[in-house]
Length: 450
Image (cartoon, rainbow, N blue to C red):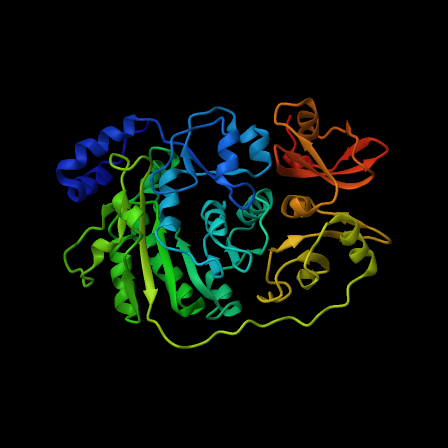
């Protein structure tokens, strides 16, 4: 790999002392690859029966595995959203806190969606996740990943944190702030980060991180949690940012992470002038100590209070008969309360967390488009609602039909006429329209294999 900046090496030598040489040697090793099983789609036990990629578990992630398997991103299981490929140390922040299944959670800097998908797997049917990304092109990627995973009750937004804080004041039980940073922890994996590194950029990032955290405070319920993380090693962006945050916001405390994270990470660093006596509660991942790249995490807890927050339900809408007939014909069951119209299109989303029109890039599950006398279903509808479909076509990962389907071709089937989902070894991969023994392909062109 490229030569590490001399000034960066000097800074790390000061931080690590005797460990510096081991740290430096770790850059001669290949980056570690890993994935998490999407337990919204398939249980860990069922995935283990199909798992051809790895048997080595990540010690701090129950559904996480290291892997060394070429072509995993093109496998039908990946198309079906059975798992999410993610750098293993990046899984540490979400594992640092016990997430209640009914929480309302915001992932403030979410693209491409690794931490969002990890959070969603911990939320239950009554939990809601809002995933925000400020860059439109990245928000589109984020939305595509949430769609592939087949998630319900997920909203994606594309807003500056300041604007978002006005839309969602005191709305969330937890906010994930995986802040943009100088990327020191990713030097081994992404060499472009080496070219972009400067001490000035470190200071600029620290300033921006403080501003993002202050926006997060406005959106947090009293008694809630902010999980702050970076993929860098600098004190300025990590412990120092946490320390000055706590000085600005005495209503917060630094909270210890979960035991499994503490066992697999290093203590935060006490620095000269530090005001927080528990700064060691913050956690660090180093490539010479934890199997993965660099990561920092701090859990910040707002003081408890007795204030109650009430859900606001939307009024019941009268739905188009064409839409309801489509749902009745297509699904075994569904909750009519969750059928809404958002920005002109029918969606499936909880009415207990209303989203103002025009706010979201994507709100819940897009059912499709209501045309003159029929509904054209969206790919997301197949991916999220597949288990509830009346008509299902079960395929194996090795059969010719799944290869044809992912390539965009039609195939023969004995399924009855109508809209049907295609499943690969039990997990939905997309949809088809069956007509007289032929499954007409509706897999999006941008996702098809070549």
